[in-house]
Image (tube, rainbow, N blue to C red; front, side):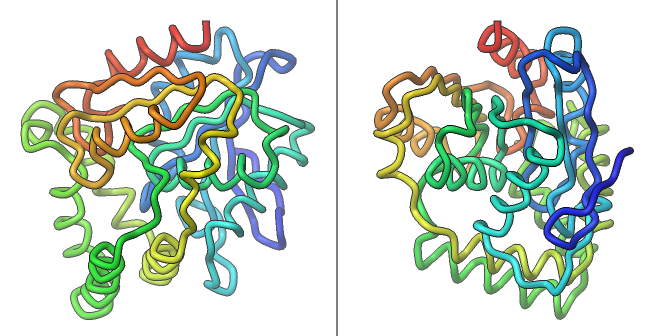
Length: 263
């Protein structure tokens, strides 16, 4: 896996597919890593240049001093694109990855060719959501990462996925357990502090694909529909048998919509 230094941090990424084809860049959710996009890389590598990377502190990328804001993650995204010689890309983000993409397009819209927003939303955290993130930080500090991982899995997977997609559940559990407590806590603070990007949606003039699991409790279909209502050129698909990790819970339908969008 290639590495580079961006913003004084070691960043691990993959760069596959056709070198001079239209680039598709995937941003994973919290607290996962780029391994979650394996099937999507295989799907698009025959027709596109496909890039994935570990967000700072996640996977094999360095956390640094532990000060994290969504804007710093946008800085990392643009720095990686610059390193790869990519001025503008099709950007797909899931959950936290969607927050990074939306803040990125708010800052520098000319760097985006299209958007795929998966299981994400444009609204900032409510007071209740901020309180839940504070509770999660306390739980990590008091009970450790393993207990946090077990509880987090219940909030991101549909109940049926534990029986139907045990491999995906195991994979995600391993990702969470391998994430440091410092990364978990720092990123939770960044998520709680993120800005609302809803007003920006009306200014976006590139094609947008919105995908969400029908059972997603964290970023529900209603939030996805709100984004679609504010966008000029958006298609939205609600995926059955999926919650917050729709690309792993219903990869068949997820990949069908992704392929159709990029064709």
